[in-house]
Length: 121
Image (tube, rainbow, N blue to C red; front, side, top):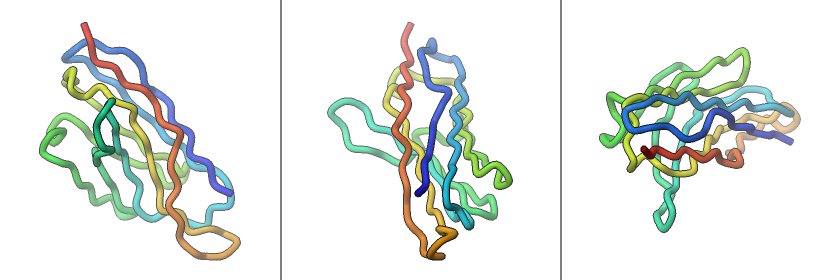
């Protein structure tokens, strides 16, 4: 009923930047919180950033000051601007969204398929 499609991943050198996008489509009435998570090989999935419908954001210390999450509510899209990238930022990045369905008016959490970010020289 709802699809999240990520784009913008790739290979970047240390110190470089990337911008990820995640567009939601389908039977959407509204979207509450949206977020980005990442999972490196052999590690658990971890929080990268979240943003509420009102624009309040949250980051772990590992990315604070380097990553910025934003959203365009008219486009049902969330972005992640990543600056000063480090090799330890290498992971598959996933977006998620708490979507209120147009059909039921219930909230469900959906995940994107993931996009690879590799930081290497």
